[in-house]
Length: 313
Image (tube, rainbow, N blue to C red):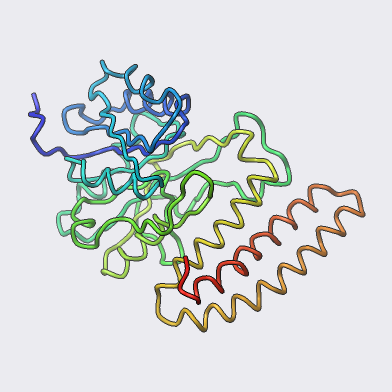
């Protein structure tokens, strides 16, 4: 039997915040993994949940391995990820969202490239993420939700492609060499910021390491009705644009880039607003919503660029 202090091959880390019922389904999928039970651990990083998250984790006390609950009081996804890095005993860290559905070979497929990488040439491996809609998918948001489909077989990704944080693995030595996740790009209660995973991927590539895609390590990412509303789509678009600006602010040539993006998005915001108006007067509410979301994304750039140039977040 593996000693509690002994290193393991893998750590599966699941940051979570007030999604206990989705988490139950994810933990059930992990309990059915064919990966040897004595060679991985499961960490649930509770980021100040006020629902029945603790009770759901307790339901899996008899699983092998049983999930270990860790409370992270600093609010934000990347704070939770960084706590997982500190707590992990695995040589490989697998980060999974708390609302994914898994096949029994998911962990085996995702870890395979890193386990075979004796030369330390791979810095990250992402699996396929397939959105599913238990409550249905409105036609006007359908074009924004599709599988990644970067390549049909396991292998390195082109620089223009980045895997998603919902299904992403790193060797632990990457964090020892490159540092933890960037918390200024954090998604927390009250915002839909993103970018901590893509910023880490950029650091991995800058260090000369390959980023791989493992399509057989596919997960289904559940998108409930609350994520297909106009309110969610517009806020997500606005905050995603802001997080891209915050991320870009730390890179060379940011000022020139921001000037170009500001002017371009000023025109886009006005243009898409006019398209939204046209959709409304021609009785095409779906087209109007699409255009308004795109306009609001441009407004996110217009809001954040001056703040970042002034040294604010």
